[in-house]
Amino acid sequence: MKCPEFISLIANICTIVGFFVAVHLLCIWKKQQNYGFERDKVFELELATDQLFKESIYYIITKRDIIKARLEGNFDRIYFENEMRLRLTNWQICLKEYDLKLSSLNVLKKNYDKEILVTATQIQNHFDEIVDKMHNELDAQKAIQDFDQKYIIQANVAKELVLTHLREIREGI
Image 1 (cartoon, rainbow, N blue to C red):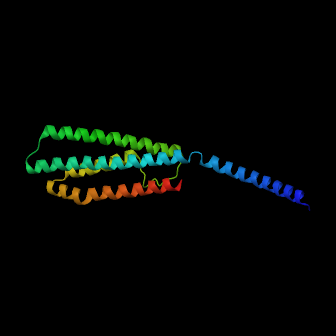
Image 2: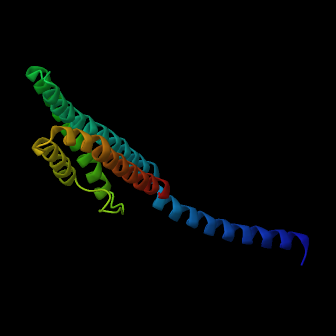
């Protein structure tokens, strides 16, 4: 085999290998063309979840403050009505935002643990139960202690669990 034939053979082999590399890259590109979009959607859900948990805690803190103010005898009805209205409105806005972002994850057909990422309705029911328990507690001091010792810890643990799960989904994309 002479030098020009050898160079021609190498060029032909490189062309064939280049073709397969190009086809492989095309397949990878088609698979990952939504890569940034999907990561952004998961990140937006992380932000919405973080804000929802913060507003949920603020909402319950306001309820605790009402119970505490009644217990101490310095309850200002107008102030607390306005504060509860504000907290409830903010919480409902965050709940709707969370639901919208979770729906976008469903539309993208991303797999996630439905036990960890629950619907907005389930979250609303859970926090309403907490507020009802605090409100219906006959011993106001116990309601305040339960809040400080139990509900805040539960909310923070749930928040970390959900955010860790979302981070794993985002990093897995």
